[in-house]
Length: 377
Image (cartoon, rainbow, N blue to C red; front, side, top):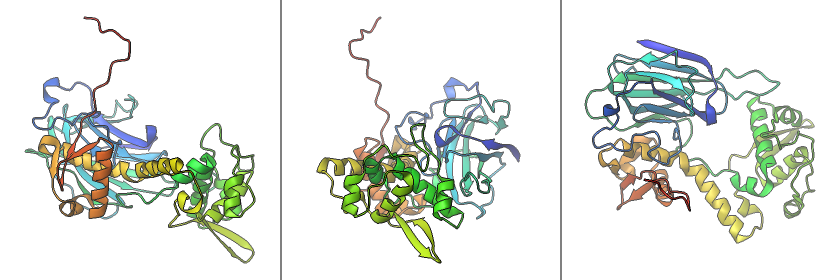
């Protein structure tokens, strides 16, 4: 076994990327019957719910933080262990027989640390992730998530991806994206501060204030004035109109997004496990409700729809013919989640369907020439 380890990797755009080293043979890039294995052949979310791979590339969905990444070359399928929160296996086609950790924009930072797999050809890789609590300023530092990617040669036709462990459902629960559309970025910033403080086990107002982190240069500090006028929504909820993020916390409690419990004159907060949709709580125009529902669908289904596309691109003809029941154990998802994600993928043009249980990954549409530009021969 050969190992390359990077202790503190900060990925771009929350995506860990592994690619072939330079110098691939162009004649080996296209695999017969599998035309959509290029990194940009399909307009799907990078990484899917855990990770996906193709012809000389691998993407893993990570949070914006530091990570420990281990690349391992194995002589055969390694034994399974249960010390990991998320695990998926997928084919990987190596054009050079060597890989390296890189970034979305192809950084050469780790080019001097290639991992030799063996001869060019088909491999299988098991991507495992052990997650740790997020970094919180002023509290104990996070150890960073650990990613292990184990490669081994697999002669013969590639077997489609298989999900072996999930730490969270394939389809995300309803998000508070609707609330952000109504209340602004400050809403999500405060909710995230509550989540971080709750991870310490003591989400008091003081700890939430300490955990608060502005998400952009336009965001204010915890006690600075809000840029949004939320008086109309506060009136509907029966609370005073908030003028700072500190006061916004009580509006979120009134909306049902945050739970507040007082004991011994100390109030502790936590995120609701079943937050309501914004249109269930507030009176909103129909067009705003429609926009919010589109945003929520994107949050819930876009990662899992990428998983479905990953299965399809590794299937001859890029077409999967199986019922949701037959796919359930392969994807570690319920039949309802699979059915809804297929429908979402079809609506977005990522998948096409031709009857119950059959879907095809669709290639990225070709770029259209700019209007008014004349092509020169």
